[in-house]
Image 1 (spheres, protein in one colour):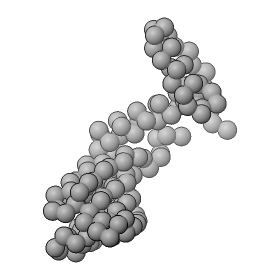
Image 2 (image 1 turned 60 degrees about the horizontal axis):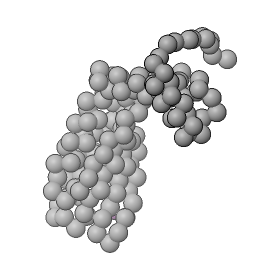
Image 3 (image 1 turned 90 degrees about the vertical axis):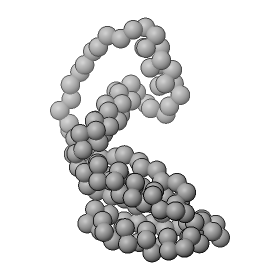
Length: 138
Ligand code: NI
């Protein structure tokens, strides 16, 4: 069992009402878990801002008919083999592929890999989802 603290705090009535509205639109069973997750979200954002070790997912949509693109994307991923945990490739349509790449490393290096992938002609969209190694979230 975690070492639990009971906390009380003061906020403006309008913010409180917004909090209640948010809670009502989610499936959270209680305020405590909702507040815990807000704090965790902030910890993850702060961790990325400070370039700490992180886990992220890069989602990339590209046209595999683009000349030399598939080879270039594979080469880039081999250059970062030590950081890439797994890559999943899906043939989205006749022309388009989507890959999700789960990466563990310093936040800036994950962003840099996403930028390097994004710069290739035929890559239509690259999104980075920021997550965490989980060490500071328990
Ligand atoms: Ni494909």
